[in-house]
Image (cartoon, rainbow, N blue to C red; front, side):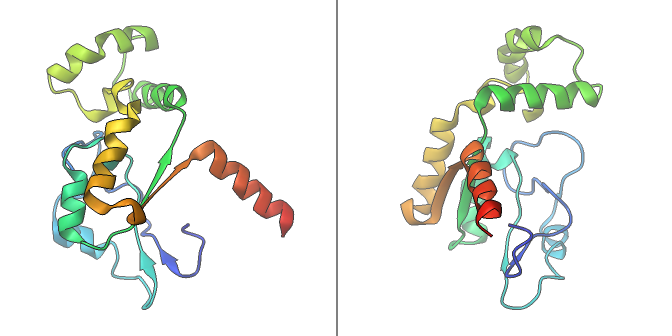
Length: 163
């Protein structure tokens, strides 16, 4: 979407501004810092950003709705197993995870109860049903579109083949 001339996405990917689930690392903490990300947006463009934590967060939809009542939400779902393992590998790369994937899954429930960050919610993050329903409840059927990443990649490939 960032490549489309009428859509503006800031250089900073995943600011994780809205919501109570932060994956760790740096994120935008205040409204002025958030708005500054969009100050270079050309006039008459649609602006947006993408933060993976918003879907899983219990309060991001509400905060987004308060920020922009007319927001359009695009949800791209990844295979839950692929998503869980990718999140695990990310934690290993960062040096934050020293358990095997299987051990991390077994430890997940107790970690969540202890308040561990979203980046360690390997299995729970892939329980999409309640997460998506939350966005439909706040924004309505006409303002939320859900895609499977695998399908979207096929459509993109088809686009390249046609043009």
